[in-house]
Every structure is written in structure tokens, then in C-alpha cells.
Image (cartoon, rainbow, N blue to C red; front, side, top):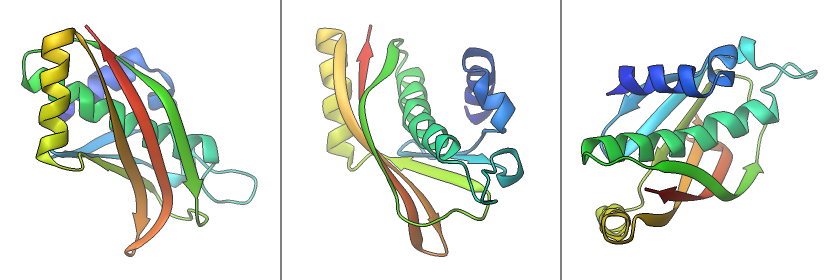
Length: 145
């Protein structure tokens, strides 16, 4: 499924190819996306904030994309609202992990989407290095059938 997501990202969101976003790991409950620092440097030789935002928002988008595919569902996924905390400079390759907070959260989302054809969910993505959070992204996603 990770390879399929990789193809979707590069074909539907061309920016992902330019900044080098790669789907790394999908567990069914979480998704990790990666991008090399050298493609995403700012004037301070740290990761560009826009790249950090992109990797973070797309980790949630990708997690929902794979969840829908697993359940034989299709829908348009959009970010409705977000908040990004840039806590520390990122001087390493970008790796954003997004996870459902619980099985109950995931099941509520799926139940609502199946019943109404539209559902909202808030997801959190983190860029962590050596057990230290550097970026925390909170996003509200809406999925329409």
C-alpha cells in the first residue's frame, strides 16, 4: 500500500516529487512520510517551514487515503483547518508520523463516512528527532464521497 500511496502523491500532488516526499511506513494506524533535508533547506540551512508543513499535512492526508482504500471506499480528502507548532529547528531529514489517537476515533470516522458520505477528523502529525518533538501539526480533515 505504501508504494501505491507514493504513486498517488507524485501524480496528484506534484510538489511531493520536487521536495522528495517518500511514503515510508504504514501500520494501519499510522503513516510515516520522509523527505531529505537537502531538498528542503531554507536560508539558515535548516528545514524550510513550508516543507515541514507539507510533509505533516500530507501524512494525515495519506493516512486517510490508505484507510479509505483498505475499506473499499473513495472520497475527496481536504484539510479544513490546521495549526503547526515549530518548536525547534529541523537540521535532519524530515520524517512526519501521523497516527489515529485510538481505534475508536478511526471507527467513528468510518461509521460517519459510510452513513453520511461526509466525515471530519482531527489528526496530529509530529516530526520527532531523538525523542524530542520539533514540529507538532494538528489538522482537521474533511472527507466527501
